[in-house]
Length: 290
Ligand code: GUN
Image (cartoon, rainbow, N blue to C red):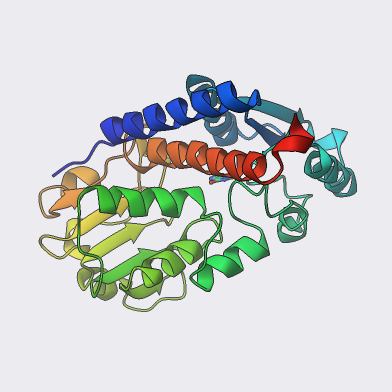
């Protein structure tokens, strides 16, 4: 089965839109997501545009703060994030990644975001909470993958889940999340020997390498559930994922395409996380916001 996520995404968006409408009417407060983008990365421009459009669709005010790389230093960025932390009108903060290479200490910068506004769930507190099994904000891509699996009522407990890639954005939080669902986890990376053997033993294969068409038919067990997180361009400049889709689709029992799979679902999870932070903020301190 090839699983296009558009219907599921639409269902999430409608629910989020209704809840925001309800809160806005009752509290008179609009949810605000501040997106900080440094530089002019081609892929980031597309991601940010898609995030802005999705926010508009559901009634979230998405404020883009786009700085040229030369316009802002890491120290000034830290100061700017602190101002967003202190701004009561801002409910959620997102620093678009990757940052330009001159901003080399990414973790120190992400660490400045107030944990109650950290919509990506990337700050050490939120990652720690996820690993401890008491998550507050779950990173959007792993959450998207889990919700795709849950939408199909797939049994996760006891399944062998192989994750390709160990990034802080996907691989590591994905492993923590699937572990809390009682899957048995293997994380493969550039140092892994016999990677294809691990892939062939997967019941659920989650691919987040960033290498176009890396996963081929020979690497997949018949009936495997294949989730493709990658987004790249192939030799003809067409958008493709980590999985050689045409080659693998008939061997997998379930596969997400690129485009049209995990990507739109990730944006739906960003909307969900923004709504959750907004809801918590107004329920905890409605008076000061009025
Ligand atoms: N760049 C690619 N994916 C992501 C993401 O999920 N969050 C942020 N902030 N930047 C990204």
